[in-house]
Length: 215
Image (cartoon, rainbow, N blue to C red; front, side, top):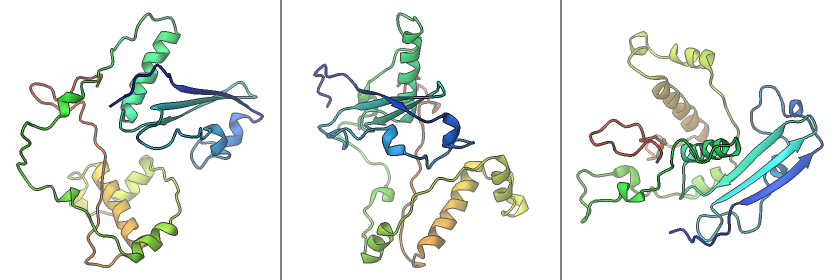
């Protein structure tokens, strides 16, 4: 539930004595001084009893600016936030209202009453952790990897020729990352683990449609 207390959105304005080129070309994480581009307002973290949205706009001395935000994921996913930003942009450019009215309608995804499972969902079973898992988490290093057309082409070529047209780039890249991850973690051959992928179901074709476009 959302407590509509008219508190508004936490909004921060800042100025930085740097230019955009100093963040690298092309722009990709990790960014220098990232912590200063999104101030960690006390009480703004977490899921419950915290603000839904935190926005910071930092002006650069070259005339550019950096827009950062912290989003409460129980309220919206990334695409939902993009829809919100587009609506705000239309209003700031003089529009009286957004061209697409955003939709809440959480009841559309409610379970049946009473709930009825039609198949087992083992993906939601808890996998017990052991001491080795905790040690690996402590030693984990976060990094970002970007896969463009050339990288995807090279990964496709690692597969047998008859698989090239059968598998999508998403499947090929997922399998490649999965293999690298399990090798890096040095998992036992019989260990049960989970691979989770987010999926946008707004455009899922059904009659009637599962969700409205502006959900």
